[in-house]
Figure 1 (tube, one colour):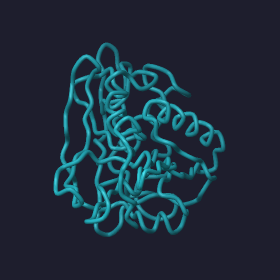
Figure 2: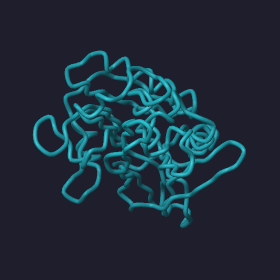
Figure 3: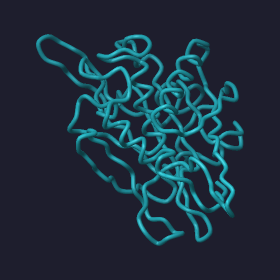
Length: 260
């Protein structure tokens, strides 16, 4: 996500847009607008149905008449600042309220999400090292210790996902990650405030981590790619409408998940 730095009477933006990718391909964007506001979803080919579907986590499964809630377990890499754990938990709670998805925090980690040699999220390694499919952390840009190659240019954060489908399993997200750039958010307000805060940045990247893409036509949405004076404190109407399309209101999956 790009930062907007106010230089009266105009604003200057810096940075690059982030990327949402998946193991099955880059996918396509599906745009929608209306009374509820603007949102953009990721769509990709589903091998189970041979159709194009919205890319999302399984909020639940309904198999043989039995419905089970799918719990997305996650860890946090706070890079030595314990206050970030509480901040992320507050952001995830807001995401849960807006989407109906179920998350469960299982502890901290030193693992830093990154792209593999093929340019995809290293989903299998992330699962193997951390024991969870979703990691949120802070890192420096680049490669090596305390760095993540998910970060490029001067963006303040990145959210990314990997998804899969097969002949026996519906298309679904199997791994996700959010990385916030260390030293790249000094201009943001603390907590969850309108006008450009670290909390809004987290909500934006979490939106990507559940399947939302950027909304370029509505500065009043969290998923607008620039954070600054016009940014809301929390998910706006368009954001919530999009989260409903990738969350529990979109319905349960009817097949078991495929392995990473």
